[in-house]
Length: 273
Image (tube, rainbow, N blue to C red; front, top):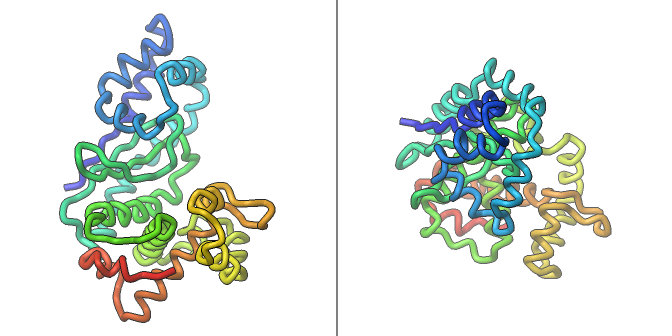
């Protein structure tokens, strides 16, 4: 059974009761941090430069009005229901060894969706501060569900180069989302604009030359992936397209479906960019 941990409810409890505490920090500690300390400490450990002083400053600068829209939206469109429905479709295509655990929370610095290890196993997380609506939430869930399955099997997968691991993993997540929810526009599965997707279509060879030629270090390629490069006329995250094409070509060439990658994780090691 899918377990969804709605930590955001404690955050809203904190917002609703700020006036009853000597400071916002006191309220945050008592109503949000302390009840969820084990998860939040694990989450914050992924930010090595974060300390309680900077976190306290962030909490003290909170404006209740900044959260009014997302609070109202959540009350009208509970993310739990969207995730549960998405999970039903995902598990039909690729049943998990065990259902993932989900965490919905406010973390201040978090990506919109990601997988981290908690209590020795991967969990799927959603940083709700990034959302203006939940139009793409089920696509994000499908994408991260694929990452969850990859992480379960990670010891059986040999990616080789780190940049290949990143691009192939992103390609699997994007292709899985595309397979589960084919009615969405293709560029939405990449979280691209239409223009960026069209740019990738036209510049696939250029992308391949950058990411596969050996001209650049891993550190440079990671920077290209996250923020792009103006001098190279390279948009951020465009490399995700190479991973998607690699997965698509591999499955078509070998007459496999995406679920075969999770049932036989050694196949993932065979995918080439």
